[in-house]
Image (tube, rainbow, N blue to C red; front, side):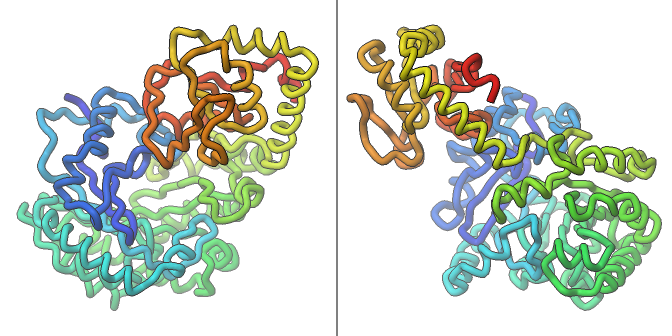
Length: 469
């Protein structure tokens, strides 16, 4: 069997609630919860097995290409390994359950979620999580932390790392640390200097070396000299061979993209990076859609996109140490949210107008898209969804409706189910997606409920009617 190595050998506790995933870059990554289940129940559970089976079949339909560097750079074949059986333990354990962070980054909502949590209950959950993790701890060959908070702000994580005693020889073991660098000084390093005996990789994310930009994007008032001094200390550990690989990273966005050439040069020449990772902005939902849209200069619709593309032609980005996580791809955010809202509203009006003035054409378009020999699922029971159900009722036999925000249980005698509230399956069904303009996200969401015969989008069903919107 061949399988993506991450899906096979990765296990992460992602937050203080105990949610676990065996890959961070898929829509079906969450496979269990360490508060309610044991490690063994999760690792061998139905969700984990289903995800692995999908990857064994080389089905990457639920993988998020913008998040996965192997898919975005078309290098997934290099990351696939041959196996006979699923191992009892993963090779890599990621400690990301303590989301405490001293930053309040514009690209991340962890800070707000952490501050809103009940800290006493959180500590009790940590006890349960760590009790389960200690069963796994000696058996893994690689430990990583944090990625979902600031490593050196977490006393819990530092303690776990300081106590790691793997069964495998030190030369076979690896540690990967992810940090914002603001606390990575000699004093904090001493708490986990035992990790220097292993193959140690460190990734430091710095939003900018311009002080104002750094402070704005990181949500702090630290002087940039603090980061620069810490990077020099980290560089000294690299030069001594204590750190074996040093990655310096940033999140490319509207406020810092013009500084990228100088940022990249300094990372390589001044701070001794083995790799400079350029990771691009992805919307977390921390701010309104229009603000997050404006941060994404990789979007071809962005007013600064052409300038961004010109900057990315700088020869420094051809340096072998530069890693463009996007693989040079543009983002898929599309047009401005307000333009999308206008287009959706106009398209909806045109479909309603057709239904009122030419119901025969409306029915014919629907009849040409679906057949009576396979079940029909209508997703979304808004105005257009109800018009679709009106036409289907009495003419087709096997029909149901799905709606995450359903306010009624049935329409025209057709049952309406909430996929998040009850067990549903769309296996072998013809699924009509009635919300306009959000097909990709809805399809990705619905695929967790089965493999449909086909998805039918309103945009394509009534394409001639709404093509000018």
